[in-house]
Length: 286
Image (cartoon, rainbow, N blue to C red; front, side, top):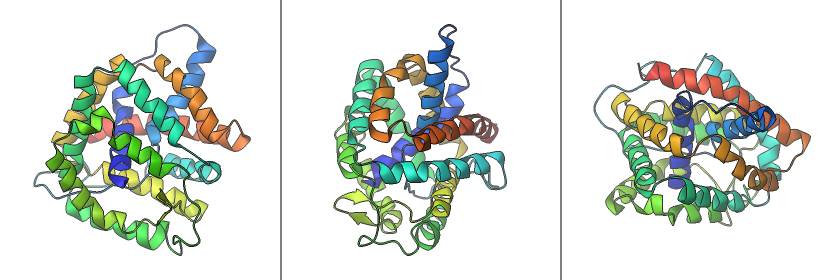
């Protein structure tokens, strides 16, 4: 299940760099701002837990592109702002339905498949030392003291993962690669409690902050070659799935996360993350 969430997290984080080349058209300032806010929340990630496999070659992040940077600060703030919102969500699967429907309608099948395959290749290329570090953070920090008997789950996350697994984009990936990723994801998956098919959420605001930072660290350890190919593929898709078209997902997102003050703060925190994501990915690819 976390395999598909890892793909989503990778695509959404690296899409920040592609977004820099995709300016929204002028006109409709209020709608554009609303769309930008929502798109920013998507860009920082819909969820957690990724993993990897070793591959020789220089990584994007020989030194951290996250720790001690504005990106770390903004991701920590998003982790804090989103904590109560994710805890209150009862079923995220309708958003998965709308996202899959959106991709099917707006993105050419070949391009959606290319992005997904590039994301899989990128995840397979992340150094094994990164997954070991990530697993340690999940076990010792993010889920410290959390187990299936005492956790709050992200409602509908299991159903959402199954729907993503059945999507045309995921099915376009060679089954042998999916098997390889599933095997390589096993160590990280073992650190994430699951209850009733849904993943458990971090047990505190501080743990949520750490999770979002750790996810970015993991994603940005992708080797430059694979990361560059993925960003180029996302950029191509971004021309088809433009920012204004993302407005069609807003009702589904509001249905899942509500319009509460906490949800609005999460939206703002997501908006604040986007510039740091764009700057960091661009710097990593130089």
